[in-house]
Length: 178
Image 1 (tube, helix red, strand yellow):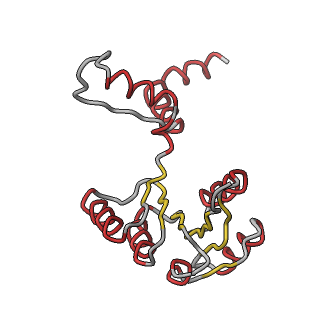
Image 2: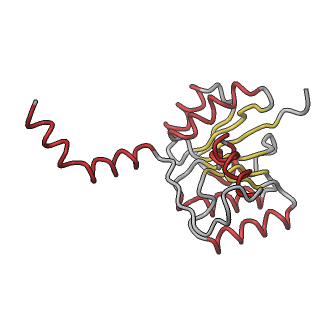
């Protein structure tokens, strides 16, 4: 087996919990440190996932010499700052989606990653779903013609909300008859 990537996580919320559990299964990485502004949360996360170090200062995590890569799991509005912080410390970065809140900030972090020669990746796992790969292949081979506009919603909760919005009167009728 190749080198083991030593990971640090910025943010100890729900998505970080999932990442930590998945990382424990993969064998090519180890969770070395975590950080949260809330010390109790950082301690609880480190105990739950057997993480050797925890920090309440994101700068300390980013600059920790025992970390090769940082997973950014904070709210969207903080992705830009935490990604730059990690890149400035010459760490590879896997940032939850969206990478940044707008294109201009996204371009800036890409420029910094290129300048620092650091890996930067947005956690856009949906791009690798078999259905998406099939659509991409059909577009590339001209099977479905020229794509001029595409709108996709891969969020089940959103779909249920749309169904509820458009069909609420039907549900009221069903409830009336029950």
